[in-house]
Image (cartoon, rainbow, N blue to C red; front, side, top):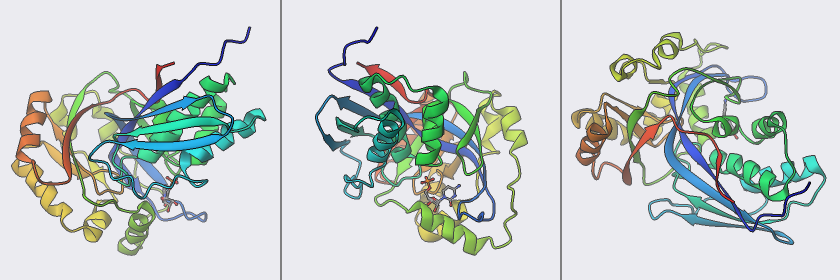
Length: 305
Ligand code: C5P
């Protein structure tokens, strides 16, 4: 039985932070081997798709999101996601797509990856093509290193270039975060290039974060000292004012603060929702916008159809 085409489908996908980001020396293909602990947090993009006779894409950024640099043409990751999915099923990539963006652009929180993951799930439903999980994850990995995690959500260990994901413990333990976004994004490739310049001695395989993974379900104090980001020094070099943001978070009483992924977003671990709101108040004005969010949360999921 084939079900009727829905009038619209909305899929929500979360931002990610890296509780640990271990980076090795660049591989022959230019990508860096990673050992990372992904953690999905409650800041989301919503991708809504509707039936159409051609392709169209529009953005609805939240007031604090600067989406001026997001390409809307063939190089948009959502268009690439649609083309791959349509190609797999031998059908045209036709849809009217609207992305409601709450995840900062070029912020180190994998907003583009979230959009791609959400688009795969939404278009699969709109087109009624019933893609297998195996194919969805394969297409996700082809689209970008962080896209498989955006499908998966929760807490996950990421290996390879980040695209190989495996769920880890702590999925039922809520953590609270304050997120400070920056006025201007940072280009991920340029942060990796600067990492290469700073760390010519980086080993081929980054060390595994055994202790953090072991403590992921433990009280928050157990993980506060274990947050780590190998890209942080590179991001701080390229954007020195982030040092002030991290220092302000410490003064505001956060348990720990790190640059998220390739930055420039900084994230601060807190002990509770109330504590996060207190720290957020202390960080008011430290960046473009100060948000609170909890994690881990689900990966790309249907919210409306
Ligand atoms: O995979 P993704 O498209 O998100 O990667 C964006 C860029 O980030 C790559 O072109 C590369 O410069 C850098 N990158 C990397 N090593 C990784 C992931 C990303 O060098 N593991």
